[in-house]
Image (tube, rainbow over all chains, first blue to last red; front, side, top):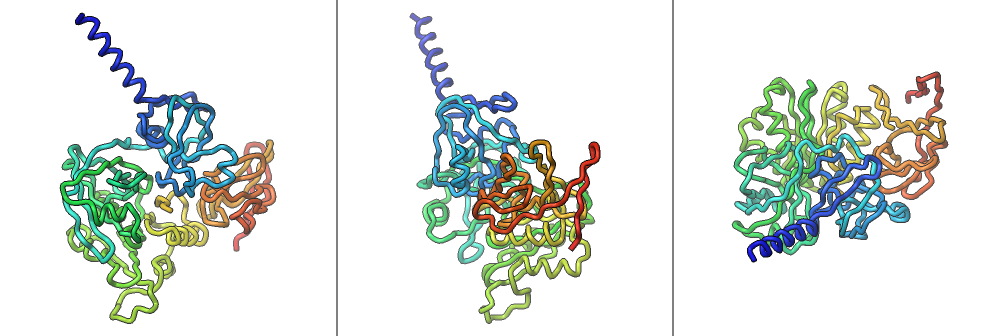
Length: 358
Length: 88
């Protein structure tokens, strides 16, 4: 009797493990890794330490395209802008928007740069506080049970109540053992992600937090000065990068620069955020710029888009290749910066660090 | 494959049936790196918006790419590959 019951339990256990995990195999190498039910191909690959190509994890950039060889795969967002009609015609899918329904085999070209040094994991996190920074930006603090392990500049994928699909937000604080995850977030229009975070979520509420992701993290081990460029909530990862750089003994003699732009002075939260951290206040040279030509109030900083201000500064700064660049902001800004730095100034691409959020 | 040479803009080399072609590695539409894209026959598809170029001629063959890609002459000598870049 007892033996029979045990065997039923063992059978159930086997059944549930079997049902909850699928095996994904990469055609070229024959390498296989498990994927929990409901997890995307991309997240499962990175959890297994595989250098699957990706950038935004949000269906926007198209970096994580793969070809299905065999198996049943569900597309979470068939109209994702990251997949072009040509890619669809060729049977390609986005790994960040695809969930296996069973074992499957795929074809993809791995990208060594994408090898995760910290493998992403899921956790629950509780909202501790929400602090207004500007009319449309706030700093959110979440706490989780285990240490917050990430590299400065990386992002998390948040599952928010009432929101379909994960939202990517970059951490603004430093990795820590207390499980504190902070984000500077901008509310854009009446989007569901913003509504959930700014209107509905209350301190004490929990969300899903999957991290860390992203390649735009602080690189140590070279002797170049650091230039950060951002606008809006793009300050979030730059704050983390600068806070880590300001504390790194090997960067003690390095210049740390921040170019930060907004439409009007009321959008510029960077100076106040730098001032509250002694190390940042002491080390970071901050250049602020406003882009609204109609703004007629008092303003002593720069005018123009932040990439134009950087361009002007570089004219007098000597060799543009002498810096490492980190940038985060809207796509027109990242595109303009790439044109300026890659094509015009011929800065090696290995010195440009950004994740493309579309 | 990408060719990153200090002082030069990013270049890419493509193997079309044993023949090597060198082009700019930067998409003329929106500055993505073409070496991250999909290469088929003599066509490189940009990873970002799916526009395409013929790597032998630089011709933009698929929307949204419209401006041709810069191409460079290639001389292969043994295992070495030479190309001629005229500075602006």
